[in-house]
Image 1: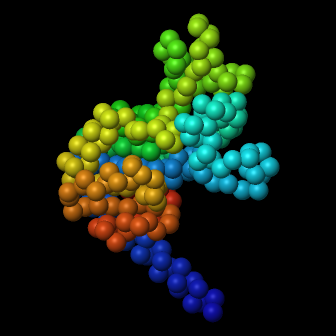
Image 2: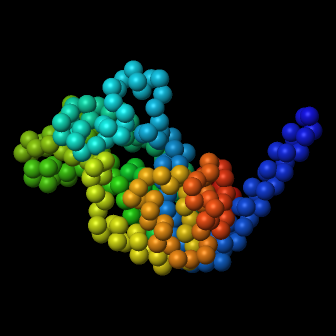
Image 3: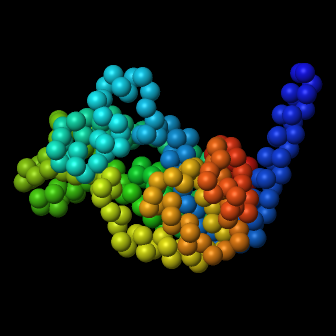
Length: 254
């Protein structure tokens, strides 16, 4: 029985290495890659998926994350919104992982045209990526709703209660897209253009269930669609290559 288990693990490892080799061939053969990423890219840098709810969560919060991170909740219960936001969304000590670094390297080499991300942590830019389309905004940008003054994430983290502008006293809102809010039109148009014109589209760290962002991949017209994720996605059947596992480990091997 032990022998069968070991043989099965070795076979699984062989399949995975073969998939990584195929991905390396695809990457080596093009200079027009677009990467579309989700929460799984950031979790490997120690940033928890805000949707994950455990027993401790229910002891601290009376509402699910999707309710707290809505426009209605932000307006009606700003104190509770920012208690959650500072606790769960501001992970300012996180560092880029191997996936972030590899993508930045590909861009420097002229292979990667753009990173399209659903994440709001700024780790792609921290790794050195220049052309990053942030579909859901960034915690690193915050603006006074009254006078428009900019504030960084440290200001938000250390503010008492609801962050207020130090000039006019207005509320300071994170530049992130909350539930019930629309995505930025220009960012959407640019993302569609990059995806539509890509030779290779690599989708990583996302289960492709968050819309409208997940629907953007329907604009891809090429024949080298690659999915890299720890678990199966609804789009695996449409992909030309599926590589399951840690995106950081997989990208480090390329």
